[in-house]
Length: 82
Picture 1: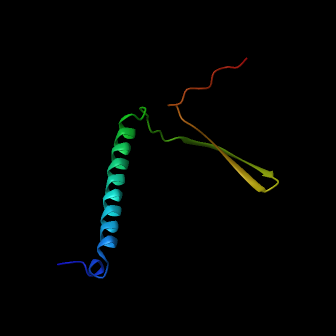
Picture 2: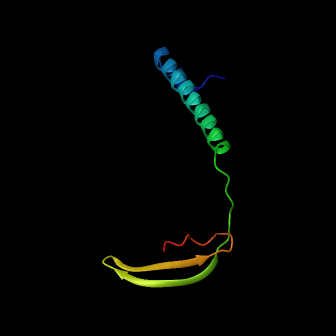
Picture 3: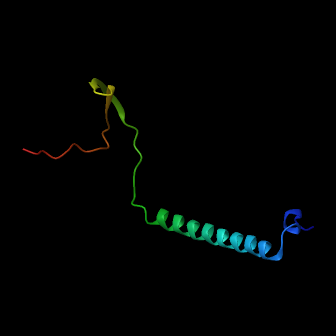
Protein backbone atom coordinates (compact mmCIF):
# COMPACT_ATOMS: atom_id res chain seq x y z
CA UNK A 1 0.00 0.00 0.00
CA UNK A 2 1.30 3.46 -0.90
CA UNK A 3 2.28 5.92 1.78
CA UNK A 4 -0.49 8.59 2.01
CA UNK A 5 2.08 11.31 2.68
CA UNK A 6 3.89 10.52 -0.56
CA UNK A 7 0.64 10.49 -2.55
CA UNK A 8 0.06 14.16 -1.72
CA UNK A 9 3.52 15.17 -2.86
CA UNK A 10 4.67 15.91 -6.35
CA UNK A 11 7.16 13.64 -8.08
CA UNK A 12 10.13 15.94 -7.40
CA UNK A 13 9.34 16.12 -3.68
CA UNK A 14 9.02 12.33 -3.46
CA UNK A 15 12.36 11.91 -5.28
CA UNK A 16 13.99 14.39 -2.88
CA UNK A 17 12.71 12.42 0.11
CA UNK A 18 14.01 9.20 -1.44
CA UNK A 19 17.42 10.79 -2.07
CA UNK A 20 17.55 12.13 1.49
CA UNK A 21 16.60 8.71 2.83
CA UNK A 22 19.31 7.02 0.76
CA UNK A 23 21.89 9.59 1.93
CA UNK A 24 20.81 9.07 5.55
CA UNK A 25 21.19 5.30 5.19
CA UNK A 26 24.64 5.78 3.62
CA UNK A 27 25.73 7.99 6.53
CA UNK A 28 24.47 5.45 9.07
CA UNK A 29 26.43 2.65 7.40
CA UNK A 30 29.56 4.80 7.30
CA UNK A 31 29.20 5.72 10.99
CA UNK A 32 28.67 2.05 11.88
CA UNK A 33 31.85 1.04 10.04
CA UNK A 34 33.85 3.82 11.73
CA UNK A 35 32.55 2.75 15.15
CA UNK A 36 33.51 -0.87 14.55
CA UNK A 37 36.98 0.19 13.37
CA UNK A 38 37.46 2.44 16.41
CA UNK A 39 36.51 -0.39 18.75
CA UNK A 40 39.01 -2.78 17.18
CA UNK A 41 41.88 -0.24 17.31
CA UNK A 42 41.16 0.77 20.91
CA UNK A 43 44.15 0.16 23.22
CA UNK A 44 43.81 -2.67 25.70
CA UNK A 45 42.51 -1.60 29.09
CA UNK A 46 41.72 -3.13 32.46
CA UNK A 47 38.81 -2.07 34.61
CA UNK A 48 39.60 -1.67 38.31
CA UNK A 49 37.50 -1.01 41.39
CA UNK A 50 39.38 1.55 43.52
CA UNK A 51 39.26 1.36 47.31
CA UNK A 52 38.05 4.43 49.19
CA UNK A 53 40.70 6.51 50.92
CA UNK A 54 39.66 9.87 52.31
CA UNK A 55 37.93 13.10 51.31
CA UNK A 56 39.30 16.63 51.50
CA UNK A 57 36.84 19.51 51.81
CA UNK A 58 38.03 22.98 50.82
CA UNK A 59 36.54 26.25 49.61
CA UNK A 60 36.89 28.10 46.36
CA UNK A 61 35.45 31.40 45.16
CA UNK A 62 32.51 29.44 43.73
CA UNK A 63 31.75 27.41 46.89
CA UNK A 64 32.76 24.18 48.58
CA UNK A 65 34.97 21.69 46.77
CA UNK A 66 35.29 18.01 47.74
CA UNK A 67 38.32 16.01 46.60
CA UNK A 68 37.91 12.24 46.91
CA UNK A 69 41.15 10.28 47.24
CA UNK A 70 41.09 6.56 46.39
CA UNK A 71 43.69 3.88 45.70
CA UNK A 72 44.13 0.46 44.17
CA UNK A 73 46.92 -2.12 44.32
CA UNK A 74 46.48 -2.49 40.54
CA UNK A 75 47.93 0.99 39.95
CA UNK A 76 51.68 1.35 40.50
CA UNK A 77 52.95 4.27 42.59
CA UNK A 78 54.18 7.34 40.72
CA UNK A 79 57.85 7.71 39.85
CA UNK A 80 60.01 9.49 42.40
CA UNK A 81 60.76 13.04 41.24
CA UNK A 82 63.67 13.71 43.63
